[in-house]
Length: 117
Image (tube, rainbow, N blue to C red; front, top):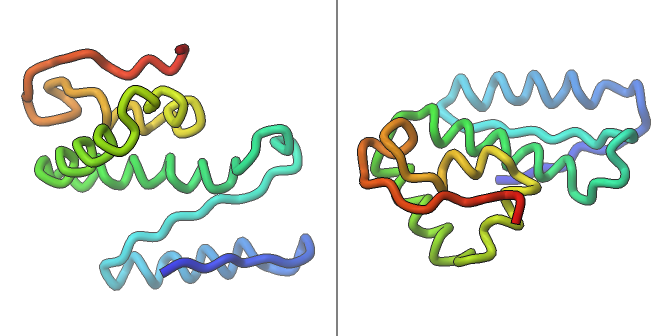
C-alpha cells in the first residue's frame, strides 16, 4: 500500500507518519518515508529517492540472502547497463547490485556498478 501525506507546514504530518510507521512495523510491515526538503528543490524526486534508499537498507538488513539475490537479479535484468544512473539517485542501491562476500552471501565477485559513469 502507498500513501501520501500532504499539507501546510506545522500541521503534524511528520508526527502522523511516524506514529503510523510504528504501527505498521509493529504489525510486521515495512514503513518507508521520504520528506520533501526545500533545500533539495534542485534534486527531482528527492523524497521518493530517499524512501527507496531507505528500502535498500531494509532489504539488506533483513538478512535473507535469497531475497537480496532475487532483488539484485531482477534489477540487473530490468536496468542492464543503465543501473549506474539509478545508483546516482539511490546510493544504497549500489550495496544490492554489488556482488561480494559482505553484500551477497559469498557469491563470486564481478564488476560493480560505478555511479560516476
